[in-house]
Length: 277
Ligand code: NDP
View 1 (tube, protein in one colour):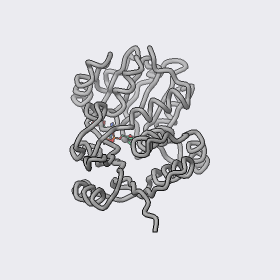
View 2: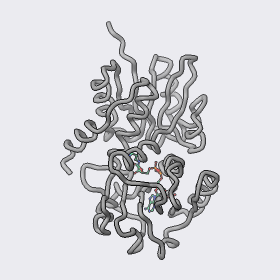
View 3: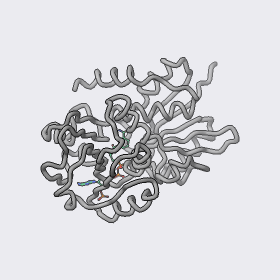
View 4: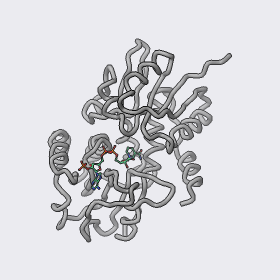
């Protein structure tokens, strides 16, 4: 009997996860033999479930809401970008039995923006809405693209200010509340709050998006998200959701585990065709 290398995504809830399908497509495309499943793992059971998974021969895990911070603590050692982000979405068993933690969310977003959609970040004025786990993961890769400025706006203002302090040595970043956005304009607005999926939006002033600007919602859904619709209503050149980021972060995780880079465009096209937007 052939025993396949085992991978999984842990999260709670997890029923909606598209990750098993994406990794199955990557495996077929690259000729890799592996198994990838989605497991509902509540936060309180994360460490036990991860221990069992790796003890029983599992090779790698993705971790999603609400487990990324726990995964950061769980990892025996971390890549520098994961260390700074405070959140881990990819765990990889190493040859010596230790577990490496990485965060591929940011590279997933930047790859989708730049390579898939032709959106330049260099010298652009960029706004991130939200200061949760996803924001922490995307700030450093965005600053690496040398934007003119990066502003983090959050409902709980202190969290935005704290993030700006943590990443301040990497580039021109500041933190504020939504009220402080009244007289400002941005070339790219990224929604990293969790509001879209409950049909809400942060309070956004008119004229926040510059002419020929772009909007990107990290959330994705089978329908247009609230923020994607806000972008279209505010004349965004493109108003995108996070499906491309999901596929790109998965490709980066696949590379960490298998040392093979899958092609993403055909997978994004297929996943898009299945949701009929
Ligand atoms: P967190 O729970 O860590 O953070 C949630 C953020 O949303 C906080 O900044 C919070 O503000 C803000 N928020 C929540 N409710 C409101 C509200 N009613 N009004 C204004 N702000 C609000 O979530 P994550 O950072 O992990 O995830 C954020 C989103 O990104 C989710 O939709 C997730 O699905 C998506 N995501 C997508 C990925 C992809 O691959 N496409 C990858 C990772 C995440 P406060 O601090 O004040 O509570």
